[in-house]
Length: 268
Image (cartoon, rainbow, N blue to C red):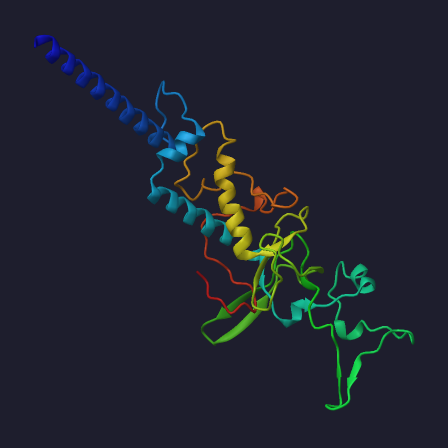
């Protein structure tokens, strides 16, 4: 009887000890995650860091990352309109590195060129080429125009960090979602001149946000991710070329968002 009691007491003590150690380890992981240095405590593994995060913390990190990324890309974002949409032939595509080519002036004078069909009943000319092949956006690393509104006299003044931004034509396809661009879509290009890719704003923000969890596995020590200044402490790479889509030198502090001209959006 005494032996059974001692046995139960021993197992209870062991269970309590194990539970206490688990709580202590979890507390150390959370404290290290929040940037608190614990003397003599080994750094937790990336897997344990993620496991120790509550759903609330994970959601907070996601929101901090996405909002910070949108703010950093604001000057490299534009809302497409009809003026950005174009259709290029193989000839005009080679000449479109710095300026947008108007489809109205790209017709050839050759007599052998196939002419558009004439609708006899309607008396109009129909053209089968109704889809856009390219969109016109600024060159990589160049900022878009911004709109500043003077509230005192209700006038709007448009200014640009580049007096005449150089532009280029890129294929009308977002390779992340595999959807063509349409008017009113928001598109982003890299703040680095080395990356030439363009994506939907929503697509690239989602990619760069989720990239943080993958990059966490490469870090030697957990970072204080629950902080806006450090939640983007990883390389913000393009999903295609793996070049810098957002340069480290271009990361900015929490400042009001400036809206690109013609977007119709309000500052946040």
